[in-house]
Length: 72
Image 1 (cartoon, rainbow, N blue to C red):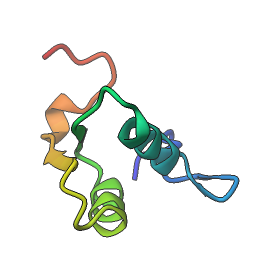
Image 2: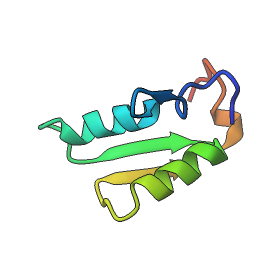
Image 3: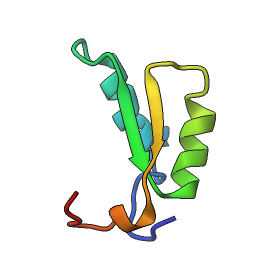
């Protein structure tokens, strides 16, 4: 896990990433929530936490495209 990442830190009763995903799932205009990451810990968490929820899609991003300020 990236030591600078706050995604898996707890904020109150759940992880920061879960607050974000849950808010996106509850938005009326979103039909799909796509998480793209190269971080194994984030991939494992999302796979476990949102297993069976078809509106949450996990896409593995290559490490070379995951750096800050990386143009795509």
